[in-house]
Length: 63
Image 1 (tube, one colour):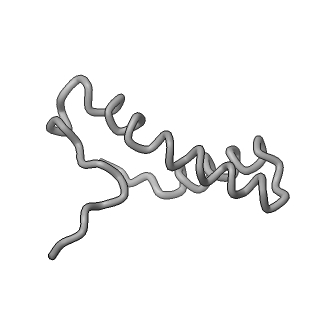
Image 2 (spheres, helix red, strand yellow):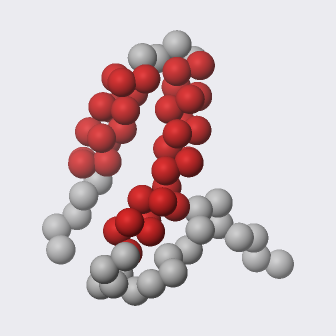
């Protein structure tokens, strides 16, 4: 039996106007949870958010 992913699947195709907003909505609570965990571990929340932006940017791929 396959398990559901922790992050919900996209409702639309990648070229749909709503796709990016839908992706942000799907990831927002998970990001908030990660930042909460970082803060609870003693990391500054703003610095942790900045680190996540940097790490995300490093993972961008050329189209």
